[in-house]
Amino acid sequence: MKRAILLASSIVPTFAAWAGSPSVSQVLPAAAQRGTESEVIVSGGNLTDARTLLFDQPGIECLGVSEVTGEKFKAKIKVAANAPLGEYFFRAVTDSGIADVRLLYVTPYPVVKEAE
Image 1: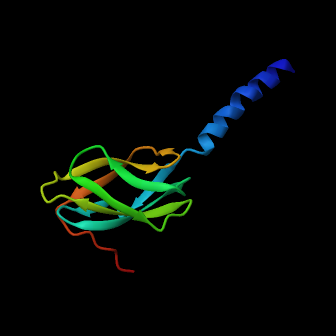
Image 2: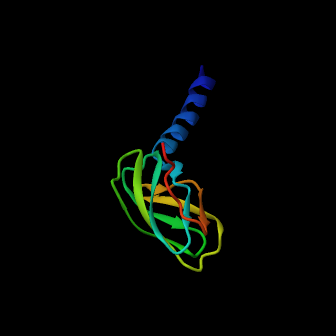
């Protein structure tokens, strides 16, 4: 019985700490054209207090976020005209923490929504 209580008490704090952490599961579109400003929709969990996107490499900056809900928000990003093509690592920053790493791609081609 003591072992079960000890095991349960060590697991519960882990779930409680994980429950409040922000997470990003998807970004649409997952690419942006070099030298443009565009909007991306970031989806995940615990994003109610989203503030910005933090990029690891220079060349992309977040100009602001809007339409924030608990599960998604829109972010306006600006890609420099001289930004190298390829993968850029980013994290969503909220008042309650920083989300896991995700990727956004910089392309020389326009990013257009697929026709239905």
